[in-house]
Length: 314
Image (cartoon, one colour):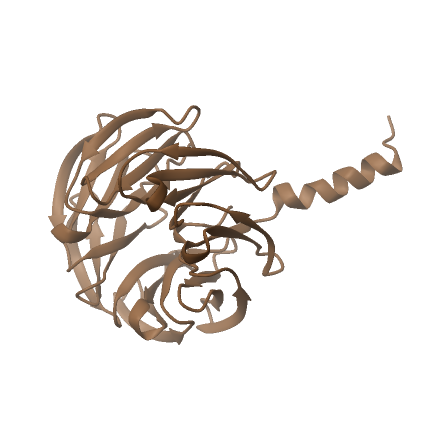
């Protein structure tokens, strides 16, 4: 059976929306999310999101993007196909860090004020359980095998490791001062923690949750992302408008890249080479080439671009 010209055109124009990777940038001061088509590095749409959106977690299946809304005490659900908010969910007093399980079935929300993490069913947004952790949990990261949840406890200067089959905290380890952003490598063997007040990154072996290295970076590191087959760790230094590049084999800083003012959120393109940095005070996103250590593009977004979390679809 042959498709009509109209049907063919409909299929052709519908496919890029579903297939192209997008970055979802929370604009905290503008109560919005900029949807960036990263095949062109252009803002494709801007969606209103009330509640001072901060954290972002794109579901691995690509169907939903979850945006934490601290002042609305929960998160908003963005349908990535229609590019519309389809639900707002109240969870807790201080919803900030947010993450999604690798199978896209669970949503995890850190409560900054009540020192806990809520576990929600992604089908109906019901709270499955609440896990007590350290003071002021912020960054969250689920292991690639979906067995473990790691939590940065900012005011406790620690990281907790939670067994997801039982929702039990099995270990908590002291790291640097005021940990915030976390990232785990593709094998699940190493965890990297950006410590805001001690200006360094803690490197942990996940099996034992033991700190194996501490790497100095620049002022107020907030978040980190891996690139180039996990060989490079890029860390946003909020107070000096830069990104540190760390060699993950040598465990030392090998480069410093100037970006916009007050960079925070950072996430890697599916090509594993280009890294996107949300500049909070510049209302922009810097695009870094992780091989050349150069900014190759700057995208104007919305007011107060923060994008804390995994904000790029695969």
